[in-house]
Length: 338
Image (cartoon, rainbow, N blue to C red; front, top):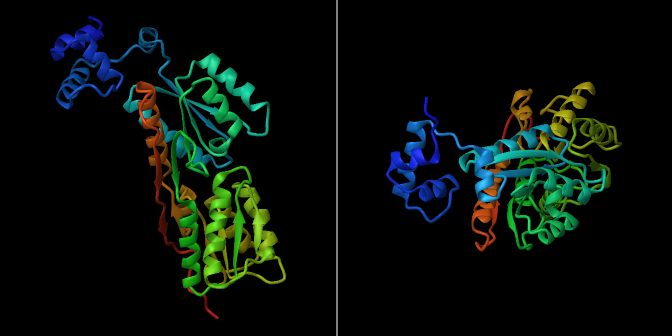
């Protein structure tokens, strides 16, 4: 069977080889009609681009790197899903690279990654999204990058974030509307931008009701299930027990549910529990967790799409966008019964 080449596609679609190349690389200067005609030719001929030849022709690797350091496997899976879909849409490959923020020298690690993999661009997830040393290094090396869930949007870069403060404010207000005033909070990892943003929303909601934050009701977690267990015991074994616990992610909230069961506390009759992220565990356990559905896949898809656009058109403007979370009420929260 004759090998299908870019020339074969051009002849089949009735366009030039250059036009096929532009469509293949998702360049903007192609009409919608022509793009559709070439994409149809790809399907009809079952054309699969040769990544090595394509890379040599354009002096690119067509690889996007995704840097992460997050203890939540669910979060990384969702990040990977969104990034992979965007890469597949644009005929790029995705390289997932785990890296410890406080491990081996960060810049040395990234320098090795960039030189060995010839990345065309990098997506930064928390806590790297706000790491000034890393961002400055990428700027110095002229390596295109996009930030997912940064604390700030002031930096000149592609920045996609969710409004975690507003979402945490809404879920705290839900607990307040159910009659809870003694509401505990479990923080996330101190290096992650979401940690303080979610805590700020909790504090704001309590403050508007004239409720002071009690130090014994705030525990330091790190987004892991194990830290959720430790934090839950610290809070629930205190002299004054709260009537509700809001954990910064669903894995820690699930751990609170476990500890409550071990202490023979009925959920939600004696203790309401809320989480954040809408991870699979939130709907797979009983009672199901009230939580915030964070559009992680959509955010990462958007970040990678804009990054590839930036690679293809370096002079294009940087874009900053904020995605909204959605409050989901399940069986782990209920009206406080005095």
